Amino acid sequence: MTEYILAIDQGTTSTKALLIDPSLNVVAITGHELPQIYPRPGWVEHDPNTILKITYDSIREVIQKANIDPHKIAVIGITNQRETTILWDKKTGKPVYNAIVWQCKRTAGLVEKLKSKGYDKLFRNATGLVLDPYFSATKIMWLLNTITGLRSKSQKGEIAFGTVDSWLLWNLTGGVSHATDVSNASRTLLFNIKRLEWDEELHKVTGIPKYIMPEVKPTSGVFGYTKGLGFLPDNIPVASMVGDQQSALFGQACFEAGTVKATYGTGSFVLFNTSDKLVHSKHGLLTTIAWQIKNKVFYALEGSAMISGAAVQWARDGLGIIRSSEEIEPLAASVPDSGGVVFVPSLSGLGAPWWRPDAKGLLTGITRGTNQAHIARAILEGIALQEYALVESMKQDTGQKLSSLKVDGGACKNNLLMQFQADILSIAVIRPQNIETTSLGAAMLAGLAAGIWKDMKELKHKWKEDKTFRPSMPVAQRRGFLSRWESAIKKTLIMP
Image 1 (tube, rainbow, N blue to C red):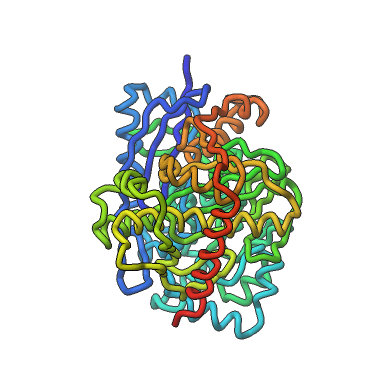
Image 2: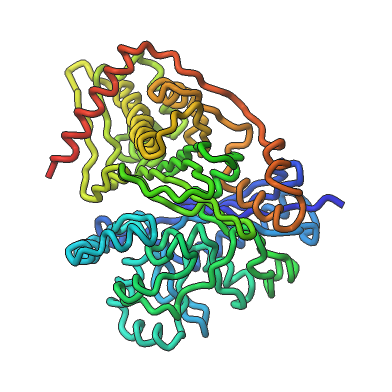
């Protein structure tokens, strides 16, 4: 009897459910958009109950679409948007407030207070992260400081904290399991990535009670069992939970030190596998846990760009130069170059390696001859040039030259963007046959735990390439692009 892995991919803008077979084929996929909530400028929220509803709906629909008996689902893997923060009442199971999304900037003031007290190094050494509103800790602090009575209930152990994986697990298991994995824990600013435990000193500094924190487990292993859902049988093991970017690294079969992937989603994220070596960046990158399998922990260097595919959405919804995201490639390809136009996609601040949440987007080099196609091309180039900055930082931190970059996410379907990425990095860019690598990683990790595959070596043999883009741009032209980009970044950083 064929057994299936159910992968739940809960992202920033949508939730997907996939059924994957032991050959890593996607048997069926369904999904729903997740509405974004913007209470104030710079604030971003999600409704936790909506997250739950569209997850359940996606699971029901994928089973129906595949026309399978749900009893054939052997195991479940969860991958999720990472730093997004949810607090809920353990007794009622109800969230106390909307989920505060990783993009939200409301805690910038709390971050500055922690910095002013000289805590940067403390957080960096323990967690591998920088003090930034991006991460979960200051979001929890804001909730505890803002909602009347919440701190008291938290200190009594009546409140649970979780990133989205923990929220889904709690509900899938009927409130039995309150847990997360090391990859998600490593994104909270509260987890010691050397000792693999919640850090006492950081909890004291932030005033966040340890009572609210989930149990931390290896990425591949049983977290709990389904209970009381109706649309799924009881006792299906949830056997992987993994942050979306780490999941994509695994789904790309980047198992060895020195392998790198870039995911082009709402934002873009480049991860460099450092294996069991914990590398602290000197060039603005994050040190994070990639995954843990049994007792072996893999680390990674990560570069995060806050805006990637979202820049194409802005071209569609904000500028109105395209009607659908797919239209940007033919529009950009209708001109031989961007006509000297440069776009810095800092529409939601700059992430690594600059870490300037206050940065504004920049479109420069416009002349009387500039048209929509030049701007479209500059938008795609700006996405790729951000990746260049991240990869360069990784090369400096590790002293390693890269031979290739594996790519995934929706925007990697754009051949013009991928060719420019290869040209500007001057390395091969490799796209897989299955670009749903975030979902695939969660399925692979769950299947390992369930014994569907013997080991990572077997999984690597199943990974398949679609196309390799090789650099072909003349050196002088590449230097020109990089010179204009560096000039634009300097302007961005001094803008008020």
